[in-house]
Every structure is written in structure tokens, then in C-alpha cells.
Amino acid sequence: MARIETPRPIRGTQDIFGDEQRRFARVLEAFDHVRKLYAFQRVDIPVFEDTQVFARSIGETTDVVSKEMYTFEDRGGDSVTLRPEFTAGICRAYLTEGWQQYAPLKLVTSGAVFRYERPQKGRYRQFHQIDAEVIGAAEPAADVELLALADQLLHELGVAEGVTLQLNTLGDAETRDAWRTALVAHFEKHRSELSEDSLVRLDKNPMRILDSKDPRDRPIADAAPDIDAHLTSEAGAFFEKVTKGLDAAGVKWTRNSRLVRGLDYYRHTAFEFVTDRLGAQGTVLAGGRYDGLIEALGGPHTPGVGWAAGVERLAMLIEVTHRDRLDFVIIPMGEAAEAFCTNLIADLRRRNIYCDMAYRGNLKKRMQRADAAGASHAIIVGDDELANGEIAVRDLKTGEQVKRKLAEALLPGAGATYTFLALTKGPEGLAAGQA
Image 1 (cartoon, rainbow, N blue to C red):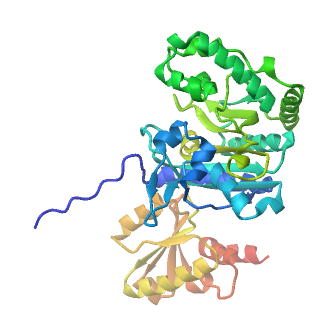
Image 2 (tube, one colour):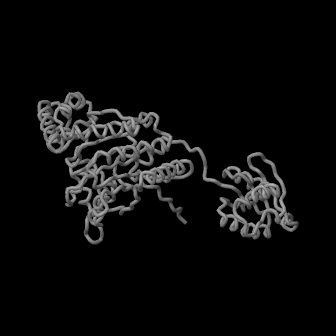
Image 3 (cartoon, helix red, strand yellow):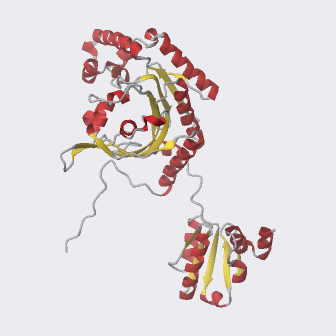
């Protein structure tokens, strides 16, 4: 019989397990905790959308839409796309589900997103993001709250040190038009020196030249005019309120006048939290204000601001400090003991005690597994001990082992705390618990 070859994982995907999964889960737990502190609601949206949702919102000339999206035709002949980000889908839902009545709406979500790009450290074709948005609030205070949320999340994860908030303003529509004109004039003078990609951008999206990594473009981009010379008084006042709000909230920031967003619907605040701890992949969280996005999707003028962060990149920055809590590992030795322990572990779990059962291998191996799992105690039940109405309890930290009478250990109707004290400390512990 021919050997069946095991399928390989798809390039750019990952299986998350062990310490890596614990770091991953820690990011999501901290995110959920902080979003509750800031009164943001959780929302879940489809993994795929009509392709136009992303083509209109991300921009048909961007690399994401032109090169990286997973787009296919379904059996009904409709063009659908796996989400490459969250904001467009949330804004689509805001319009189609009638959420305008709840504005301003503070939302978060998380999950898998998909982009066909070259896999590398911290970058996958299926990866995961956390996302926060405020829709329907034109005030600078919304920008400040989102940035404070992001800053608190980084502190909650213990990764804020060495991460810098870089901040810029993109101005209002009048500012942006004037700055774009100045940029085009500047780049036209150097057309013959620009890279091929930047020549395309010059005709379609000149602001993106400022982001170019091509060495031919950098001197020209660095010499381009700043936005500040073109800021309207209204745009300048908006940015000042954001920066003063951040100062009042205790959020440290630095100005990066070269930080841009290429699409026309972006307005005012743009920001990135960056670190040098991830090499070339230095951005851990980024976002900005997108006051024209919902209009691009066919809705009324609706202000919005948001950010997204890669879970994998944040997880790379944190250390696992603990495993999942495990109070007991139950070790039955014998058929009668196994039947008894099946009942015992079910009872303990109903009392909200974290426990597992080791039912394979000799006693030494089972004890080793219990210790490796991080349990605090092992409960050992043999057929002979069970016949004598006894069980053994071993403290896996100290190695001390004592015998307990079942009458002491099993307390019908008692709370989980009393059961735990009785098993680990005996009658004197139980008395202290009851007192």
C-alpha cells in the first residue's frame, strides 16, 4: 500500500500552540480588559465581504487591493474578498445595520485577516489583528481617547517601554489639497530621479512617495515640503487640541511630520506606535482619522477614527509569566480508583476548582506530567487506599505528601474553598476556612 503523504500547512499560515499561544491569548485578554475600562463595545463582522467594500475603502491603486487581497468569485458569480483589515467592514455594517442611531459608537473587534504578501518574521498571510474605532465623533477628544486606550493597552501588556507614539496631522480637505499641489510640484522637478514605483504614485497618489523605502527616492522625499506650511487655522487648532489632550492624559508622543496616509478620505490625526525591538517590522499599532471613508462607501458624511494592531507582533514583545491555573492533578491507580476519581474530578470542577486527571503510565510518569503541567497539588488514589477510605495529597512545590481521610476531603454541599482547604491542609485547614 502506497504511503499517504501528510498535507503541509499553507505557506504564510501558522499553528499557534504552547507558550506562543499563551502570549497570543494574553494580548487578547488585555485588550478585552482595557476596552471594558473605556466602555467600548465588542462587535464581530464577517470574514469576507463584497470586494467593493475594500476596493472603495482601501483604494484600488494601493498594493493591498492590487496585489495582496484574497479575492474570488463564489458559486453565485459574486466577487468576494477575505478581509485584509477591519475598518471597512465595520463601516459597512454601520451603514447597512442602521447603527447611525447609536452614534457616536465606540467599537472593538479582533480576529484573522488575510493578505497575500511575502511571509517573514511577524508577518503572515493569515494573521490576526485587534481593532478599535470611534464612528460619528468629529471631536479631537475621540482621537485622544483612542490613543489613551492604545497607550494603556501597551502598559497593561508590559511592553510600553521602548515603544514611541509618533504623531502627525494630515489637516482638513483644504490643507490636504494645498499640500498635495506643493508635493506634486516638488516631485515633478525630480521626475527623472524617482523610482518606477514612485513615478506611478506621482500620477495616482503622490503622498505615498513620502513612504518610499527605495534609496533613490529617499533624498527627494526628505526634501519635500512639510504640511505645516499649508495648515488651515482650523486644522492647526484641531491638532493642538489632540496634543494638549494627550499631554493631559499623560500619553507621551513625538511629532513625525513625514507620517502620512495616502488615501484622500484620511483627515487630521495620523499615528503609529513604533519600536526598535522588532527589526524592520517596527510598527506595532497604527491608525488615524478617516472622516471621508463612510462617504466613499455611499453613506452620508460621518467622521471616524480608529487603529489596528497585529496580535502576532504584540505577542513577540511580551513574556509568558504564568501558565493557566491548575489546582490539582488527580492520579487514579486501579480500576476502582479510576471510577471514583471520575466522580471526584467532576465534583471538583463543578465547584470551580481547576483540575485534570493523569490516567496513563506508571505513577512516576504521571507525577512528572502533573508537575510539568504546573499543578500545585496531586491527589493520588489507589485501590487499596480507597478501600481504607484514604487518599494521598502531594504538594508539588515542596514534595511533601500526606494522607487524608475521605471524610475530611469530600464535603457534600460545601463550597469550593472548603474542599480545597480540606484536601491540602486537613481538618485544621477546614476549621480555619469555616471560621
